[in-house]
Image (cartoon, rainbow, N blue to C red; front, side):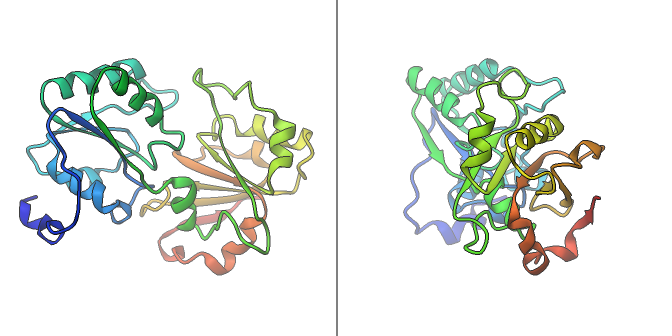
Length: 270
């Protein structure tokens, strides 16, 4: 990609991507069109892109060919770099005078460990910038016709992660409180432990027939949607990941709001 691709943005009031700095940037839920303009600009100016596994090749292809690409993806159950090593790499690259783009799927501050990395950069004296992205728990669900709030069904929503730093179900979660907190629950990284989570939600009072919607590879041509219930999630096999899981009544709106239907591989389970 050459500078002419960014000519239309030259007059905008964008911050300078200076050597020796790190930008922690959200890449959105998947599709390149959901990048922010600042994220798009950063891809054209970076010296090196340190990216997660969830960042699509189509997005990485927006960076010029000479830009170094470093895979730093962390996927459950697969060999992954340690978080400490990723942060050290960012610091070393910045100290070498590079313009370092740390590219994360979704939003870096929404279960993306962006706060941890930014904290380490701060302690190391490395200047950094946070560039928010569209979270898959918002934009990704919109591609499946799932509004996280709707005045006909819910005025509150709760976001939570399906595993802790050890890879197990979060032990500190108060499941009765979670169950009662909001009609709609949006869960990140929860596929592996979904049967256990569903059992705990049911034990905490959620109805066994409550809808559960699983959106895999959101906002990409490979997006798929599974619709089931809390009672039947234990029967699911081989759910594609990454996936966002929604518990609650907003599934009722999919019939009218599923605008991406022509490009979905959608089916109903049970």
